[in-house]
Image (tube, rainbow, N blue to C red; front, side, top):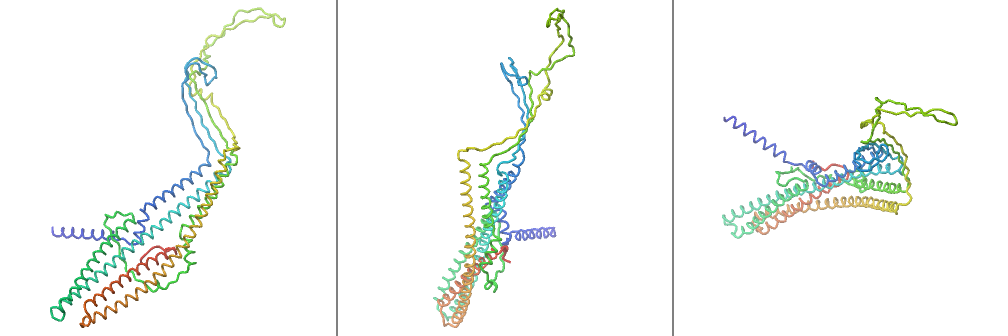
Length: 479
């Protein structure tokens, strides 16, 4: 029994460890999950599939239309027999069947241009989905780094609390030894309480940052969730690697889908004008049909019992020549209902037609369609130009932010080094009794603020570095 208990306990512990590992999210895993589940990305994927479906529909429009028709009806009173075209004074049931096909031979290039346009639209829709996915990826990366920033600040705050606790313990020892007045501990108690409040605030910031990351990932905030905290250090390469505007912009034009999508939309709008102009041109189509019908009045003669009985001869003169004629009587002739399929077979007909439709006056609709297509082309060209300008601005801003982040990091590093030295000097003076608690607390707070600024500058630099790497076509990663 004891062995079974130990095995069960081991299994439970292993399961908990595996579950904990599964709930540890890397940046790459977080971005991949967000791209798979983001509602906006999924909506754009649907639009891309719709554009591909439209392309298929336009290609199929080259094929002929084929349809079959089967009708059944009843005519009451004096009506025309559809099989004989004679008037009949009775109720008639009738049926007709037909198969027809029609194909467009020429319609001013509308079909070909529609196919080319739909192909461009499908490509553009895919690129627009990719552009949104890029925005989502950067948003998730920013939220991920925000969690790491809050955690590191929390770790620094806890270290600061421990430092204040050590100082308070040392002060209490001096008070008990009689070398320090009791009033010396009050400032440190207040500082300790302030450190505890800071920790509480930062713990809340960590929770909020995690929830915000889950929201960006379209992950239920109630799920058990945690991220891996990598060892992030700023290297000399991060501070000195040079990126030229031309290099980053040229790479961004190749890797970022916005400009490509705008270019395809501009090309697509050019086909809109060609499609509109096809309304001025004639349309040539060919058609063919097979048809037949049935009527309940359909009859056929039964000659199996027919006999001819001659009548008496009668003398007559024809052109002055004497001769005789006689009347013959036909007996045994009967008419029976003709079957449905026999009538269909006998009434079977075929037709072929060639149709030419020449537009003469369309109430100005064609002119209006062409004008609208031209305006659509102008709008698409402006959007393309706007996309180019946006990318240029984004690259310039990203490079400027990176340079500013590097300078801020170097300044924060210098400030942290000076604050650390100042604290160490003040601490030694405090230990020797040459400085009071206020001096030590001031130096400690200055050091704490320098650490906070250093942490912020560090993660800002990491994010700005990731943005540049992203424009260069490299995946988001903290490895």
